[in-house]
Each structure stands twice: as structure tokens, then as C-alpha cells.
Length: 144
Image (tube, rainbow, N blue to C red; front, side, top):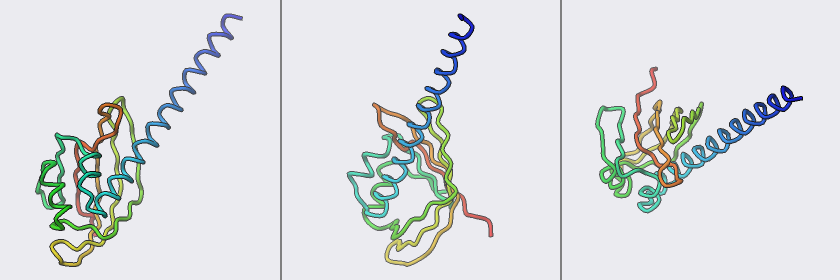
């Protein structure tokens, strides 16, 4: 009887852990969608809400921006995303850190110059005061 009870408790703990992980992964996916929408809309408030004060935003060119520069470049249209499509997304949560990988295909209008980009992206989110915040981002060009 005690062995059965111990097994039941262990199974419930595993199930609970799996469900919690799924809830966190869903919350991170929602944060990615919020980031995507804020980037397309050029919404300063939404960009500041979804990003960490310590943001490190790496471009495929090697340029790295802090939060203020990233937000300003999106809001002013220096970096203007008209559309963003994300594919092959994976999310891995470990405690208060989440790693997101996906392929980003976008139409852009940077400084009024139309273009297209296709990038592999890695995002690092950190849970801060109960909210998932973008802490770091690195992009690389998709090999042809």
C-alpha cells in the first residue's frame, strides 16, 4: 500500500511539473507574439514593457544595441518591420530563463528602403517580477 502511494505521489509530481512547464512555454510564446506585434507596430510602450532594462540586441551584421537604441530604432523607422513571419519555433524553459529559437522572415522598410530578410534568431527571455522579458537576442543570416 505504501509503495502504491509513493508511486502515485511521484506520478502526480511529474505530471504537475510537465503541466507547469507547458504553462511557462505558453507564456513565453505569448511574449514572443507580443514582441513581434510591438516591432511591427513600432509601439514604444509595448517594446519597453516586453524588454529588460539590460537588453542586448544583436543583429546579423554584428551590431549590438542596448534597450534604448533598439526601441528608438524601431519607433523612428530606422529599423522598420512591415511584416514578420516566424517559423520552426522552439521554446526551452529552465527556471526563470527561456531560450527561444526560430526563423524570422520579414519585409522591411528601414529608413524608407524596402527590403526582405530571413534570419535565424535566438532569444533569451528572463522572468522578471512575474513577466517574461526579452534579455538578449542574436540573429544570423540564413545560409543560402
